[in-house]
Length: 214
Image 1 (tube, one colour):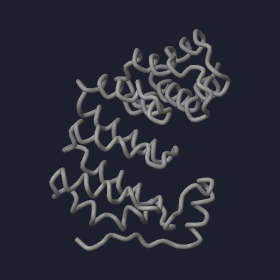
Image 2: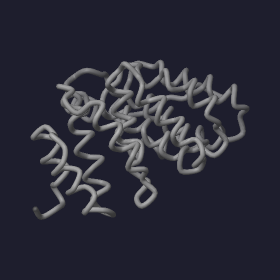
Image 3: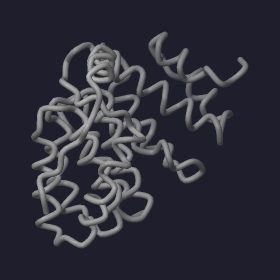
Image 4: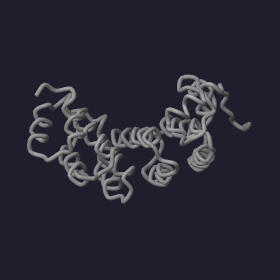
């Protein structure tokens, strides 16, 4: 396999870096084009051994430009059906490699897809993120069930929110509001009741009730 390289545009790179507060360098390739350029590589990844796959994911993730982290996460998503908790737990170390909301939320999708396919592992995966010292990991614990709809475990959701109820971190409070707003689409009564009975921060409460008339 030849060395994989993304081809972007300088103007895009400048704008994308600015959007991310100039924390990361960018190649300058937008999401649809990135997925098109990486399509063959990701197709090849499905034929690799799990060891080779993990090595490639880590190699891509180690590159400076932000889009390569996105490609690595895309690769995990494409191979999610054959990744076990063992591999995903190992790869979780990458979440805290230059963490910001973009990659953290992309990783959340990977673990959400996993619990959707392995229902018996949901609480174990939740506990892994819930008990973490780093707030980015706990953000994943809070938002882990965004895709669960009616299968949301409200006890786990409540547990995650109460743990960080007064954490003075913007991305935690946004996550609390986001998780409640998402669940309100299928169970607005539960969300309204929870909000009424819980001393949420103004930010979390506003985000939680954004789609509800109250």
